Amino acid sequence: MVLKTRGGARGLAVIAAALLTGGTAPAGVRAQAGTTLVVAQADAVSALDPAGPSAGSPGQPVSPAESEAAFLIYDGLVRFTGAMTIVPELAASWSVDPDGRAWTFTIRRGVTFQDGTPLTAQAVVAALDRVINPATNTSNRTLWDPIASVSAVNAATVRVLTKEPYGALLNTLAQGSALIASPAAVERWGAEYRLHPVGTGPYAVDRWDLGTRLDLAQHRRYWDGRPGFERIVLRAVPDPAGRIALLLSGQAQVTEGIPPERVDEVRRAPGVTVTVTPALRTFGMGINLNRPPLQDIRVRQALNYAVNKQLLVQALFRGNAAVLRSPIAPQTSGYTDAGAWPYDAPKARALLDAAGWKPAPPIGVRVKDGRSLQITLLTPRGAFPHDVEVVETLADYLRNVGFEPHFTYVEPAALPDRLLVPPDQITWDLAFFGFGPSNGDGGDHLDALYRSNPDRRHRPRAWNFTWYSNPEVDAWLAEGARALDPRVRDAAYAKVERQVWTDAASLWLYADSVIVATQGARGVEVLPTAVTILKHAHP
Image 1 (cartoon, rainbow, N blue to C red):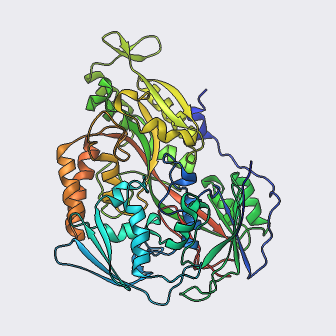
Image 2 (image 1 turned 30 degrees about the vertical axis):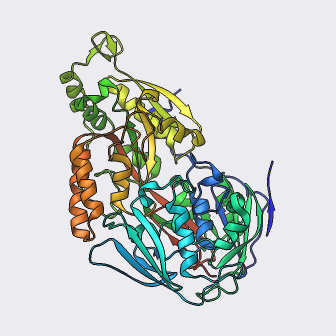
């Protein structure tokens, strides 16, 4: 393997504007039909250790680009299909004991890692021990903390023991951090393993220009048949226009992150297929529940009634997003329809009146006890599609019912550090944020965002950066997590969704879509977890 390193509100005006962007293709690799698959990705691949975060930074989550590369290099015990059903991969079969805590997996025989070492139960244990250990894996703790131990019963059998019955275990084992790394390679490279990944997957790293390009070559001893392409090249092309130009000029066969406003244009191109998959990722404004004005449920209800979410979604996403009717997306396991927060500006004003916030002439900003209803909106620039436009449009709606919004803009890499802080260090009132369960489980989504934090002196335990706390919700989350019967799980999580929704714990907006265009490539699976699976792709 060759490794190289590289050294004023727009507001409601966006409702009336339809923007089309164009561009030319950057110099790149022209694919040879049937031999090379070129993929234009929005982000660079910076690290490829299943047990580690992006670029080795604890505060930076793994990007979709890195997940997509990882699923080419590695396999897991089980995997998701495009429909998010769970099927065997390195585990040929499995069973669970009646107590719901002990899971037994039979490991597929005759599988080798790309370094030539054999896949054994001991290798699986070594790989999973790294992600279970919080000293090694600081992220995804809601997925791995329920597991007590992993052991090898014999050379072909692995036993996973959970602390309590854990109904989402298979979902977690299908997630990217559960991919199986070569113990020999981990031992050889140590702290640098993230730059020297070795798995059992269909493609192995051949050349890596950090920050720009990752070249993968066939793993010719792949256990599941010969891969569909000789090579796969992952190109980092941050500009959406550049990615589209690569596709339309034939220099890429897969282009990710198609802007919603360009879907119809790209779909009209000869030979191009556009896949729009409703995503599990939900968006909204997290509400700082430590601020006294926002602790009044009437104010939080007013926030939700004040925004015309349907018009915002149609204008910015051209129908490629759905207004939320629950804290989780409709495609997520455990989803229940909790109702609607319809656009009703008069009702929002009446709620603020009832809460004691009265409009003050001449500009109509509301005041109470001599203080104006100021709110600071934390807004990432470019972390999510249309994030700035969404928040600036939303601010106009809030201003319309008497709030006085102010903006704090942050770069994407800095967003986690602004959110995941103790309550006394929060500097915002509402924060724009998108979250989806990487393991496809609604219980994980709800647990990460709404389970009470253990104390107020430290950062949140997962992603409950609003500091929501409700003992009933905590009990229902625990009940759902322990249940192996999907009906019991769904019933518990439905209670959580309805309660959190009724509490108006956030200003909920929409769930987006994963939009991928292909030309000359079949077998591409676009998962609602925002990951494109290419391991079964072929001409």
